[in-house]
Image 1 (tube, rainbow, N blue to C red):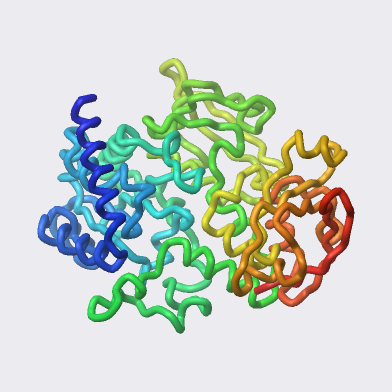
Image 2 (image 1 turned 90 degrees about the vertical axis):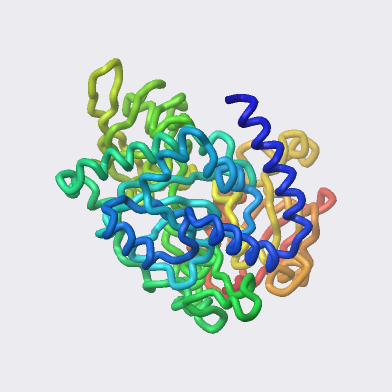
Length: 442
């Protein structure tokens, strides 16, 4: 098996490097030809998948994947389709590849749009069994997902399908409330640029609505109305690590370790616990844990869990305090690009190192965010035009001196400023303190 995986990875990496020499347009069209010719996955045709599932009685597996996506390719195509454990599981589903979100039903397909790889396992009647696909870094997926974890999620979905519809009531909460608009292209930020389908007669790659553009459009919708962006949109699908749970990517939802002094530790979670239910929902993967957390009140509440420990079940209650989502890191997300446009005029900030703090005589409890990059074009050059430079250290933003991380500054700006507003920023440059005005963007 180790030899098989090593050889597969070598072939895959080689093909990925070759693929990177092709244009995006070529890769999209070639992917369509390849998948269509193979015939195992339906290509970008959800209605056909639902019809086939109703006829066959099989569950549906929907794979949402941006083309090309080199970060998530290790869980796609060659490795997934030929894996000796996963392939027989896939054959028990109606499998459909969705390569764009044009026309996607957002009342059903709700997921972390900062990812470019996500899977849904569901019934032909639209009941969702579970989700798969997690990410906590811009490019690295290791530690979040694995082929073993995918195999377990697929098997668990098949088990739920076997018991359906007797278990339908416990699956109801896996489908969310409708979003602001029913499909991506109806959002104001997208409606004049995209339609509900890909344009294969023209430049198909440019006609695609990518996953992250849904989240961007949702945040823009509030920002353009001069409304605070909801905390759920700023901190979407919190990673379990943000509440102290480090989960094993090779399992469905099994605790690998628990961070001390965290909500999970206070609730009594232990390493080795298999989380059977969270807020009453069965879990197939880490993504299902994130789905539950995404719906938890940002102002604080309690969440009940049932864990399997030492062959017995134990009930735990986890208290999540006000602002609990803010422990999650949002700066790795693609959405942080848009937030920087809105709130920092295009500056990319990082927390100042301890060594640099000592050089500038800044205490460890004082705000100090380093401008490691200043945008050069369009709305991302607003800070540049206002006189900000790479290397500036921001010590106050709109009178706030307790924004200790880049993420907290982005969130404050998104929730407490409005487009067109000019705010005061205090910075250190070459050891000298100065004040500048920064205009907030939509």
